Image (tube, rainbow, N blue to C red; front, side):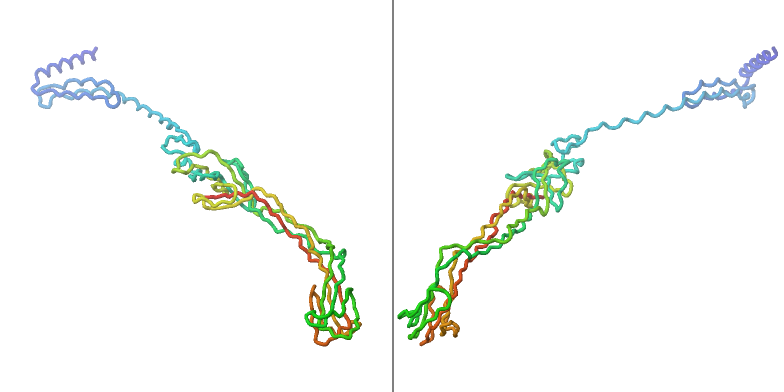
Length: 375
């Protein structure tokens, strides 16, 4: 009760002072809630104290507490999704698959490809070609199809049997020797011999010349060979392979094609059957043999016609032991003697000979040759 009475008195006193005081009362400032969505505005303080003095009444009570701080800021939005894929470039189909404005060989994704000139008329390619001392790797990858295989063919020379002629079966007619009393086998024939061996003459006339006529035969010599034909089999001194590839792409200047770069030692080339000069687009020339047939052989050993020979030597002794007065060795040969010589003996030695026609290599190694021209 006392509290209520005191409160009423204060209220009443305040009203009285407000009416009667000459100085203005001082109102307390209201405190405004801060931050976020603020709390409600605080209630106004009580009107100032007793009047009558310039300073006014006592300050009113402090306003209500500020409103509660606003709620925390919302969380940041999630990161956006990755950009949509535009595909991978196919470097052989002539299209811009990844939509970057570049087709096949123009596209950086086609670094494993290259632009190569088209094959001129009559040539096949472009293809992948390798040649080495050992067999190149099999076709595969972007060049899966084997088009040619072969290499450089080494052909060693062959040898043939030796050839001789057997004269055992040859018989010759006896040579004839005639002497004359004049030079150059002229004048009268004084003596003659038609058999081989030593022939003694008794002559009272001098002889100035004599003539030899060889015998003849209708027989043949028998060829004889020693050894056999030997032709080493041709062998490849290097090996080569040509591989066909997939269809070419685009993105190259006119007249060229977008091709996969072949793995070393393979290179981009063109080829054509038989020996040819390389076109300027593919200047580096190679010739390879892809097949061969060895047609070499030896010719037959033969013998020329037999020759019946003789040596006729005139002597001054019936026993053919004296000094030689002259010798004839050729058919139809005339030998002149020193004047006033007496031929007392004629020694005739017969022989037969055949000249061999040697066996010789003949024929060749037929080759299937291709010209391969590379960048």
